[in-house]
Structures are given as C-alpha cells and as structure tokens.
Amino acid sequence: MQLKISNLRYSNNFGITLIIALNIFCFNFLSSQEIIEDEKVAVKDAVKAVDTTKAIKVDGVAAVVGDYIILDSDIPKNRLQLEAGGYNTKDITNCELMGKLLEDKLYAHHAIQDSIAVSDAEIRRNVDYQLEQFLQQVNGSMERILEFYNKEDEKSLRDEMFEINKANQLAARMQAKVVEDVEITPEEVRTYFNNIPEEERPIFGTTLKVARIVAKPKVSEEEKQKVIDKLKEFKADIEENGASFRSKVILYGEDPGLKQAGYKYTLHRKQPRMVKEFRQVAFSLQEGEISEPFETDFGFHIIHLQKIRGQEYDVSHILLRPKVSDEAIREAKARLEKIRERIVNGDISFADAAREASDEEETRAEGGQLINPTTQDYNFELTKMDTELYVQIQNLEDGEVSLVLNDQDRTGDIKFVILTVTDRVDEHKADYAQDFLKIKDLALQEKRIRAVEKWQAEKIMDTYIKIGGEYRECDFSSNWLKK
Image 1 (cartoon, rainbow, N blue to C red):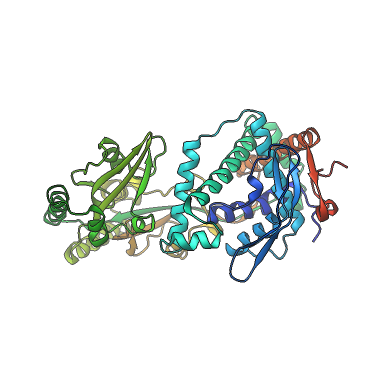
Image 2 (image 1 turned 90 degrees about the horizontal axis):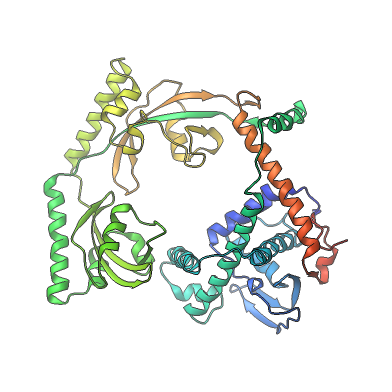
C-alpha cells in the first residue's frame, strides 16, 4: 500500500488507531523518547526480547527530529505493540509508522522550544495509573511486566515510562496549542457544506433519544449497621491489638481493583480519581490514621492513610457491601411493574414518572433522559450505541415502554429498569438545517487539519531533521525529506 494518503484520512484513521492502541497499552516502551544532547548519537548493537518468540535488533538511529531520536528498532516494536493490542497491522506500512513517530517528535521538540510546561507530579500519577492497569491484566504480577519489557527492576521501568509520558504530554499540548485559536463562522460552515458534491455528502446514521426509570432494591438499616459494626471491629483490632490492616483487606475487603493495584491507591488533591466522599475522608486523615466507617455508592469503607507525599496520598481501604435481601429485590421489581402499568394506562407520563419515582439521581430530574457520555447530549447514534443499551431498546417503537428488565449498576448490584425511545431520526443524507451542528464539527475539523498542515510544513523546514536508511525511500505525506 502506498503511504501517500491525505492528511484527513491519515489523521482520522491511522492516528485514531494508534491512539486507541496506546490507550489499551497505556504507553509504548520506545527508546526513541530519550532526549539527546547533540547530533552525535552512538547506539550499541543489542538484542532485546519482546516476547518468547520474537527478538528485535537495536541497530542504530533511523531518524533525528530536533532533540529526539528514533531508533531502527522502534518501528517493529511499535508494530508489535499494536498487534498485541489486537490490531491487524498487515496494511500499515513501516513508512506510516515512521511518519507518525516523526510527527510526535516534531510536536514534542517544539513544545520544549515554546516553553510548554508539563507537571512532573501529574506524569508520575499517570505512570502509577498505567502500572495499575497493567497489573490488572497480569493478575498483579510485576515480574511478568518486567520480563515482557526486558527491565531489571520496577524503578527502571518507571523511569522509562516517565520519559515516554512526558514526551507524549508535550506533544499533545503542542498539538492543542496549534489549533486552540481555530474557530469557524456560520458562513464558513455553509461554504464547506455547499462545496461537497451532492453525491458525496455524508450519511448520518439513525439517532435515538432514550429515557429510563430505575428501581433499586433497598438495603435494610439493620444490614447497614451490621456492616458498620464489622468495620469498627476491624479498626479496633488494628489500633488496639496491632492486627494488620493489609491482612484484613486480603481476608475481608470487597474491592477487586485494590488487589490488582498492589493493595494501594495513590490519590492526588488536584486530580479527582475516587468518588467525592472517599476523597474527602482520605484527605482529612493524618499519616498512619484509620478513618471511621463511611458510606459511598459502592458500600461502606474504612481508609488507612499510609503515606503523604506533598499532594499525593497513598491509601488502602476495606470495602464491605451490605447484602440485599430477596424480599427487597422482589419489592423493587413489583414497584417498577406498578409504575410501568400507570404509564401504559396513560395515568402519568414517562417523564413525570421518572421525576417522581426513579432511583437514578443522574437522570431523574431530566425525566429519565439518558445523556450520551461521548457527545454529552441526549442523542445516541444507533451504530455506535453501547451494546447493552442497544439490546434493551432495539425492538422498541417510539413512545413504547419496555418490559421490566434486570440490570446491574456500577457496583454490580442488581437493579430493575424500564426504557422508552423518546425521539428517533432515521438514517439520512446530511441536511444543512437539520444537521448543522454535525456539519459544523466536520468543517471545524477540516479547518484544524489545514492549520496543522500549515504549522507542520513550516516547522519541518525550521527543524533539524535527518532520516536515514530505507526510510529515505518512503513517500511521506509530509515533507520530512525536505525535497
């Protein structure tokens, strides 16, 4: 496949593929992220095993962009990362992979030149989070991660992750800076739309607006008190008898993510991570202190504050979730059945019933209307809808109310829902009046791409770039070879 493709296609397809893969893997261990002091770089020949069946020869510098280098080994390593993430790289050429790396280095280099700052503390938090994600994938085995990435110890792994994250953040902020002042007028949107030939105008898929009413089984006060008393016993045993907090977590804790994170979460005052109630209690503790039991949507907790490092707090916690009785489950379902009957009989509207009786705080005030987490509006594109939601509403006509369905909330507890489709717009060719906001987004995206192209063309000419070996034969879409 020829590399010579439009920037729009390159950015929207290949770039997105790489971003998704990087989000899955959280980072690419590419030594090309290292900053060099001058143009003379010596790289010793070495063989680094990436897995038990493949090896990569580190045989020199493939390219230099400003203060950054790209090694010959970075291309196959990048390809392996994509393949390990489940992506078919058969149609992605080495030249395309090189082109993406060149772009990343150009952005990072000029971010430094423009004095764009990134927070070391924020980068360390990202590294902590990424390691937690990796540990979850390998059942908490740091040894397996070190073996896979050929690192001797956790410190060397964290150090390399830090440099990679820093370069990636610099690149991202430079990209954002390039397009931050790009705006578009209604007249430009109209011109953009009118310039699209009729037969080439985009097709917008079917969109729906969906509302739901939720009934959650009630936990008895007796069951809540039983859990609170148990947590108080744990706290007293630790403080008065010297029992191990970690042992209590291992034996009784019900947070599955804590084990995978090494029985420790790192919170930061300026970067919300856990629910509000959890953060408030954690940040009120002194080092070594154990909190009183408190409640969140996930259950009841006690927190042990292990260490304070400036704005960072290392915490562990014991989570216990009150048990819901079979009677409470039956009551919740029966309650929702009665609500559905009132709606179907015309005694009350779906929206009013949601405001009156739904147990879902996020949607109750909006008459049960669901918000699309991607677009932050009420519209769901049918082909991009969450699979679980699609299954629940696929056979509903507009205004029809579903049967009472079993569901689970974010804590894994059972709940019951009824849903309705409040509005439907079928698949259609783009219409300027009806689809103005979508067309505006497309027009703005194109204008931003042109701004990036212009910036990139100028900076390529102003930046020291050297590409060697087989990559000098690539037909890059950007003028990396300065021909």
